[in-house]
Length: 539
Image (cartoon, rainbow, N blue to C red; front, side):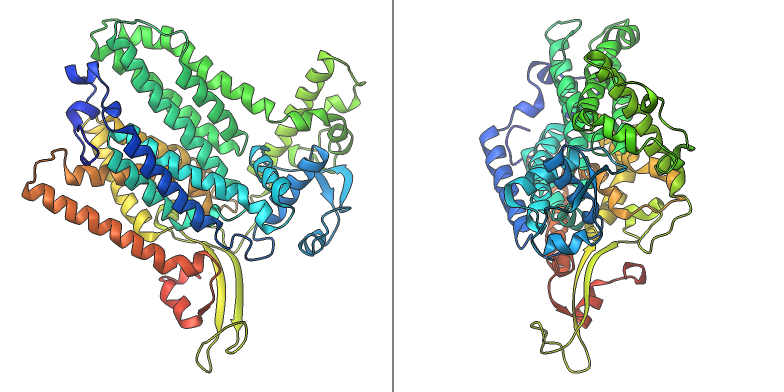
């Protein structure tokens, strides 16, 4: 593959664990014109941002869990930590008066703070209104499209496949809607994808060093960057721990495979005893340091948390045990830092008890079992304005009918359904064909989806699958590349593959246009809405 037009996959050069002489000399991901790749990827990112920015402030209200994250972010921005707020704060804020609503006592929040700090940046720049608290998600969601283009290109070696991967991500409804809401999952997915990208880049960097005769690398810069990314991901939601662990194990296997492919007879020993500690320090320990540092605002106000939250009213989730630090005299200097860290640890115990036990008996109308997430079994209705009568608010429905507006957290079915089939194909190619690229997709989806099966006795929602989407798209894109084939020479097989793959992408574009009204709060008639609700479980 020597030009951007080559969209197929060649296992010999890019997928096999035994590198060719050409791969040793020049890694495949460096052979295509970077100007073309970056220019087109940036153009696609600009298009994605326009679609996410357009009428971002509508609906003008707190949608779903925005009521928690937007207000928490504003409190962090103005007070340094999350405070409780007055009743009916939502209405007052939407009327343009966000001040004077927060009390002095800290609030028991159950998610880390990175995503809320990003939301706070938008509120600081544009104000405490729907546009302000959503713009951070729009920017990060758009940047995720750019990252997806570069990630797929790095894995596949093809600029064209990278652009296809970015386009598919940009045209997914789950990604679109979460990029237009002040929820945490778009930030989580972005940082996980960035971390995995860095791990894949380290794989290529390490193999290039071995090809030059180096026997070890004390500093692995890509892994350090991956550690920072995963630290921010865990600092958004704890579920990022699962892909961190999974790709850490996969990295160990890659280190062993790299040494073995270059003829190292002690490959396993070196992978475990030489590469292992370096990789663990660069990836896991850096992630830990970054994660703890994201709680700086909390620790600077630890005294307030110790006084307010360390009592039976708030520690019921953790068994009603008060924090030992609450009864200790205030320390100073390093002692104060250590006391704050210990208080943070006790706080984590209470939050974990909340997630693992307190919600077990709760119910929610939009809750769904994770077993059906990849098939879009139960979307989430974020907002709805029903029974808009003809002649009012621009409704042009026939007599006896009505119009409505809706924001539905529903993925593009053609992406998720085809992606599920591609995931099975990826498992065969990885386990049966020893093609590492497909393994990235399988491990990515598995580590971000399967752990939720352990928690399906509590209310969980389909948009938690957002972290799976980039890897589902990767598997789908690699499958399309396999369908086209690696050769640039026109053949009946390649022509058929191009037609099928191209037709599929066109259908995805059409599906995106079809579902656009129910993703973006557009005014449609009841009959037009029913045409887009394909199953009763989507209501």
